[in-house]
Amino acid sequence: MTPKKFLNRPVIELEDVSFSFNKVPILKEVNLTIFDGDFVAIIGPNGGGKTTLVKIILGLLKPERGRVRLLGSLPARSRQKAGYMPQYATGEKDFPIEVIEVVLLGLMGVTGCSPFFSKAERKRAEMALDFVGMLPLAGKRVSELSGGQLQRTLLARALVSGPEILFLDEPMANIDVGGKTKLFDLLGELNEKMTIVFVTHDVGLLSHYVKSVVCVNQKVFFHPSARITPEMATMIMGESCPMELIAHGFPHRVLARHKDGLASHEKGDGA
Image 1 (cartoon, rainbow, N blue to C red):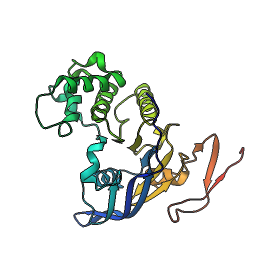
Image 2: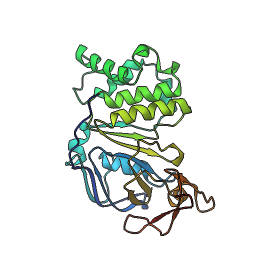
Image 3: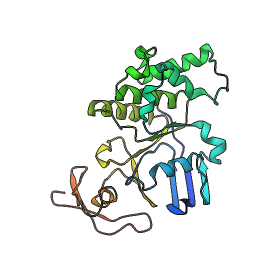
């Protein structure tokens, strides 16, 4: 895969975005800018608004106020240029469909609305499966796949349309450690050509490929590095579960609460 020369341009822009469900605030006054070529991990507690944030960026949910731009346009106009891998659903494996047919569904509404796919479209699906290492299983029923194989199939479905930016919601769910490593390696390779945004509630899953972190718990804070601090972990584990995390080989202590989207850090002993 030939690396892409990324432009210094924002691909995601949110200004003063708020969203509520049944009058319950989910996201409050979100301001966020993500640039072309980033590899972003969105972390936060269950129910904190991570998936809601991604759906607002993609235009699948409409904020009650604020401005959203995806790839420089309104999401409704630009989301066909985005690949989306939603959370794993157990029903995916129960549906009587072959692997290649799952991937072809990623072209619905992109190359047309016909339920019949051309040779060229099947070739695109085969290329996507080949990239994720699933081409030999193209004719296999999804019910026969392991968790890791299913996730790679769903990744191929998100990639088949040739997106400029890729969103993944809890992509490491229900797969073993080896499968997670393979999937992160694939995402690292993809990041040479596109922006990657993935959601996780597990800070232990952050890979060395990650370049920046977005913390979400109604409020949203952007951290321009992959350094995980105890404060970030507290957002996920709760105040009753203090943690010391090692980042880049050094213990880090948080000196101040988030302020204006930033936090101060200090290296611990051994730095």
